[in-house]
Amino acid sequence: MLTVILIMSAGMAAGFLLRRRKKLYRRLDQTVSLVIYLLLFLLGLTVGQNRTIVENFHLIGVKALVITLASVAGSVILAAVAYRLLFQKEHKEHLNFRKKFREEQEMRSSSGAKTASAVPPGRHSVPLGEEQT
Image (tube, rainbow, N blue to C red; front, side):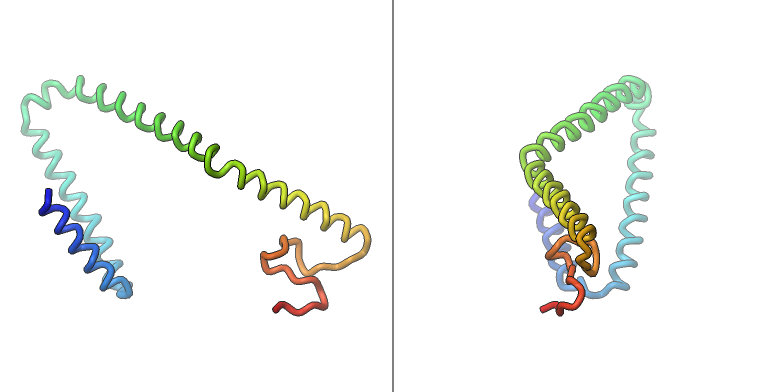
């Protein structure tokens, strides 16, 4: 396990030092994909040669399906809980801000005041005739 951690750390350090070489990055990305495909093929080859796995494949497949569905369901449920606990209040505040801003825009447009765009303040909106600082 220590070998795996050391190899991974060395790769991360090399990636950090070579991060500005976009051409190298594109080539490495393609190479990594090909190596992953090769590893998957070799894994399939090894599994196909194992008589016990092949004979019990139907049982293994059902268990794998149940584990997969349970994992996806658990991830969705926990993501919803995390969203409600961490982000829902901010999301509601943002929606309230946008609603108030739209109401102000409607009031301004009905009163004849002109603005450059319908973008909330702080989002590059400058009323006409004023300079941005």
